[in-house]
Length: 388
Ligand SMILES: C[C@](O)(CO)[C@H](O)COP(=O)(O)O
Image (spheres, rainbow, N blue to C red):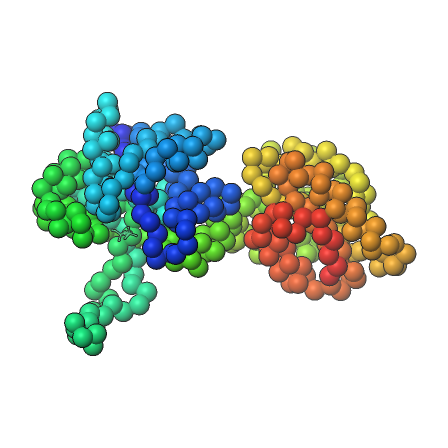
């Protein structure tokens, strides 16, 4: 437990040169939010975090972007020309606030995943030791080069680590490090832990994090990874099916490692949700043993919908009655799927209907299809009727 107040500095004033394009990476939209907002909201949700300083290039623009989000702890501050100068500006703003912050966290706003258990370990370690940083094993060996570009030497990969954020510092350690450091440090340095070592004599404790969580958006390809990872993490899935539905069982097992939460609600009657746990979900998958009335508004299930988050309603017709389907017009089927999609758009839900055309449909294909649908933008395939 952390029983003292903690401040957070989120540097977000960079120009994002390595990513390219005209929009600095912190403003790129990921799942309908500017990238910086994902990390910011995670810190907003940590109870012992009292204030968050977001250091940006254009405070008026960011204030406008923040208007519709619920971020009561945030203070937006003008950034400067380099990383260290911006962090120092954030620290000065934090130190002027009317409260005693024992520990300050520094976290890059372009690292959208903030593991709360690691943050707590870092805060405790910094409180005891003065500073703590998160680290990951090196993925590639690091070389140093001669001035002519030829190899000088290769570092031993086992004895070096990649520095990541979040990092945590006692407030007075970070303040005195920035007060004492040189103009050269402020212009060329990249590592706060090094300032704490050089100017406060603190050997930061290094805490290993997971490379799956600790990465920052630097290159264009990272934007795709951020979208995929954040969507997987935010997805919760309710699977409604009868007990004997093997594909539903298989799907729920395989989704467990891909989404934040999956629950199978057993139904004896498709109109009933009496066995639901009371949790809400942004995605709902209905397994139907026979034809469904696609015009029905599904209101019986509205208590399951998480209306704050976008998601999908997927109808799977498990043993689609092929003969019955053959007599139906595919065009009409498609139209009723589209009508249902329009109906649910206001609830932030896309709708996809999957017909498994015969009893031998390979369940693994269904699992693959549903897994890809859940990773896509919920409205990108909404209204589609698919046949497996
Ligand atoms: C971990 C870090 O290298 C500083 O310690 C940091 O992530 C650097 O980020 P930047 O992209 O170079 O600002």
